[in-house]
Amino acid sequence: MADPAPNPIYVAVDTPDLNRATALSAALADVAGGIKLGLEFFTANGVKGVHQVASASGLPVFLDLKFHDIPNTVAGAVRAACETAPGIVNVHAIGGRTMMTAAARAADEGARIHAVSRPLVIAVTVLTSMDQTDMAECGIVRPVADQVRELAILTRDSGLDGVVCSAHEAAMIRAACGPDFKLIVPGVRPAWAATDDQKRIMTPAEAMVAGADILVIGRPITGAEDPVAACRRILAELPK
Image (cartoon, rainbow, N blue to C red; front, top):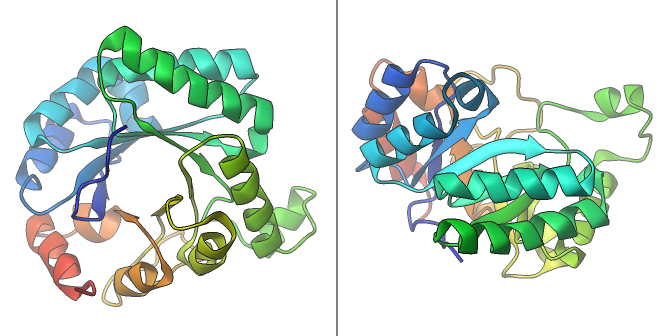
């Protein structure tokens, strides 16, 4: 199974522009711990694009496609995703136990088929762009923290490696799911950066203290005038 890099910063390179993504990833090779590639990038560039970015940076890739479908379809997608030799793949926990169990098995199978290391398979609990009002509009009336905790426990019990969660829920999930359960935390923003569309956020240092294993950081780095310097600045602010 792939282990996250010692550097916890995975930079979200969310652009359809393959040349920009490749150049940015290569520039960040010495200051980031990994690269996150999401739906916008993958829809535009596919498997070949992932290979190009991974080769340019030499860093592990978090393939952030958030699979959510019937179990057979999600299993097939996870197996196929292993062709890109990702360090991490993810699904939506709301897809349920059967779907997540199928995804975990498919990661083992895909790694064998493509002769790569098995990726970490993690689940999204509640998107960090959503708050209580957003949840209520979707018909989920219990508190966000309760929803996150129950989905994290279900994820663990389904055989997955961890969850994507807000830093605000990290300590709670760590207590509920144990020390080896991976916590991947997006929506973190340095004090000097804009919050953009994120609602449930902390600074990177606060998130690490709360228990995060990996920080997914996009616009504060990719939107900076000097992305390498911005990444270095965030890394220097993290607790040693």
